[in-house]
Image (cartoon, rainbow, N blue to C red):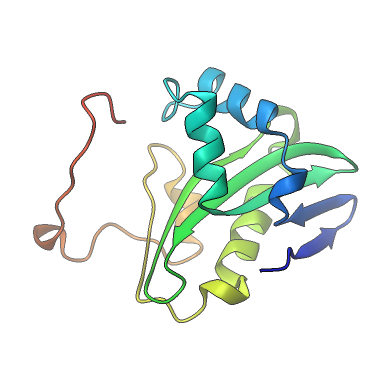
Length: 146
């Protein structure tokens, strides 16, 4: 699939994986996230290779990221969403989520899922809600999963 770019003022979202700053992503995940502190760089690279990735940039500097794991027909998982701290509070995460849910390859899906500890308000703006039928869902997690 061809990468897609959108601009918003001085900011740009690009789905080109080649442009991603894997070092920045890895550093954020291990040092600043609560969900991926034990992720290896190899795991991060593999996750990127197998996801639709959204890099957020100002000029050539990456300042945000999100990825979607999807079969592009029925299901999508949104993960690793972040904006580096100095660029928060400008509506960038909302714009990033809008670009994700509007992505042409992710239309008409039956279900989107994500996990969050502290950003419910952001995701509720995009119709995410607690599981409608939690009694139907099961999970298998690693012992250290968040």
